[in-house]
Structures are given as structure tokens and as C-alpha cells.
Image (cartoon, rainbow, N blue to C red; front, side, top):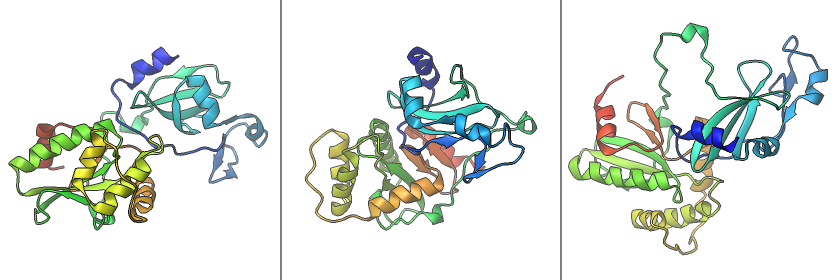
Length: 259
């Protein structure tokens, strides 16, 4: 199974966040049993899947378990070797489906791009790369222990060397999968230091935080509200989003392409 999952995740994104430690029960919406949804109330007691069970079955870290769009299957989101994956497991827990469900009405249509209104994101606590007066603001959610964030950071430095009209606003978003990232984020934010972030990326030891840095907790809540489950996560000025690493040239091309 691990070999199958490894094949699946090769093309997937970067780091991820642990979302749901509780059992998910079949045929429930907002905790309420749905009439006509399937096998009735008795199925609630027999069709359950916890994240821990899913982890043991898949031999991988599991972020969340929920009902799939197709009845009779669980949708499992996880991370293995730093890459995200999604698989589907039947209620009998015997078969894995490696697929993506597409509504019939969406056939032939381009995949909708996820958009986030940048005005929803407070930037007072953000680390700024480039000139604060630059008219083009690109927001990045970063984890100091995320290797893909480190790679993206290098690409962002290339961009601000070429383009003085672009600035990057970095929101620190430590992931639960990186247990030391939370304290590191607080240390970095207390100093408001790009250099400290770069030290963390390089694996250097950081001092203890000198302030409470409650903004880190607010960033975590905000990310969950916006549906951001991994880092790095880029938000362009027009609201288009890019989950994961991207090189400087491709990012500039996307910035110049209007949608």
C-alpha cells in the first residue's frame, strides 16, 4: 500500500496540517442524521473511520477523514514524505480508490481557480520582503520548518531583485506536523525578522520567543477559515491562489496573466 500511495503523491503539493482527530460518521451533515441519505440511522453505529484507523490502514500521516461525494466511500487526505495525497476507502475498509471525482456538469470546463480576497488577510504582523511601498503585494503563508517554503523564499528573493514594484508579505503559519515550528514562528514574529526566518530555513537554532506573539494563533485560525491546509500558500493581488512551491519565472508569468 505504501508503494501505491507513494506513486499517487509524486505530483501533489507541499506540507499539510492535521485537521480532524475525531471519528467521522456516515450520513451526517453538521452532526445531524440525514433522512434518505443511505442505510439509515443504524449505519451510523457501524460506518465510522477515525484518522488513527486511516493512518494504520494507509501507513501514512492522515490529515482528515470525511464522506466522499460518492456514497459508500470515505475521502482521506494525508501527507507522506512531505507531499499531500487524497485517496478513497470503501466502508468495508478493504479497497482503496486512487481517483478524483468530477461532477458530470463540469466535464469540458476548466478547473475553477480557488480565490481568496486579500483584504480578508491582516498584514500588520506580516514579514515584508521588498519595499513596503511596492504597489504589487503578494501574500505567502509560510512555515519555518517547511522545506518547500525555503525553496520558495529563494525564488521570492530573485523576484524582488528584478522587480522593485513587487513585495512579499509573509504570514507565519506553523503546521502541527512540524512540532518545533510554532515556537520558532513566535520567535521570528517577536523580532519581525526576515533574517531569523532564513536562519530557521537553514536549520539554525533560534532563541526562545521574547513576546507572546498571539498573532501566530490568529494566523492558524485564519488559515483554517480560508481553507489553507498547507505551506507554502501564495495569494496573488487579484485573489488567485497557488498552493505549494513555484519558481520565480512561472510566478511572474502568472502575475502578468489576468483571469
